[in-house]
Amino acid sequence: MQNRAVFVMLAVLVLVGCGGRAAAPSADKSLILATTTSTQDSGLLDELLPAFTGATRWQVKTVAVGSGQAIELGRRGEADVLLVHSPAAEEKFVAEGATGRRRLVMHNDFVLVGPKADPASIRGVDPTEAMARIARSGVPFVSRGDDSGTNAREDQLWQAAGIRPAGQWYQETGQGMGATLRVADEHGGYTLSDRATWLSQPGSLVVLNQGDRRLLNVYHVIEMTTRAGDRVQADGAAAFADWILSAPAQQMIGEFGRAKLGQQLFVPDAGKPEPAG
Image 1 (cartoon, one colour):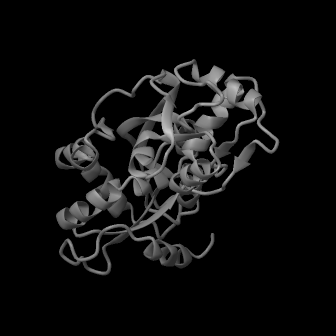
Image 2 (spheres, helix red, strand yellow; image 1 turned 120 degrees about the horizontal axis):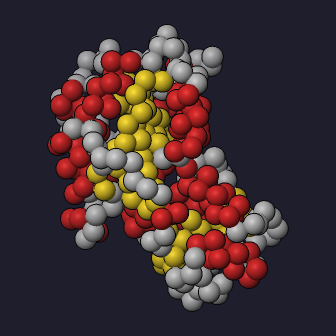
């Protein structure tokens, strides 16, 4: 196992939101949250983490990566709790036996965005047909290419369309959602984004395809245990998971985005059945 301290240092560099707005926690109550770039780029963690620290005195060091990378950190015992949105990969990971509980937190949706002129004519068509039209048009499609939950859903749409994307029109950034949206905007191209990050990022891309059940985007919290590594803070993982599913946290999730953007960005789902996607 790689040295967990390295990842603690990395996490400190991308620490989200705890500074100065809550009572300083004790040094021995510190946990690592591995999560997706969408929860960071949308600004959601800036709202949630100070409240969690204030309520529990657990300090959170956040590593924001793709869901696949977050799961790998958990697998190596280098994260204590995961907040991710790649259900098939999550289920496979939990079946390995090193995790604790996996519970539903919230959902929103994916959207296909692109230039307002829509040169590939994808507006309002079936999402698999939209992918096929983009491929036929040769207009740039910018992929995250980072094993994230968004990248996994994109791959599912290409497979459903019977396409293996390749060529100059298909570009991979290997970066998070915010950076990928900026590249797509610069190149006048299309991309698949979670709605919250698209709304939170400036740019000229517009939503051209949305609302299909295949574009549902579901987030779960996964607690790690010492079966993944003896340095895992299982009590901290449980504290975070219990808190994010609590009524105050779920209310914050449901209200996030309303004041600044005029619309709800995430739907709280604690205690509900799994959304049908």
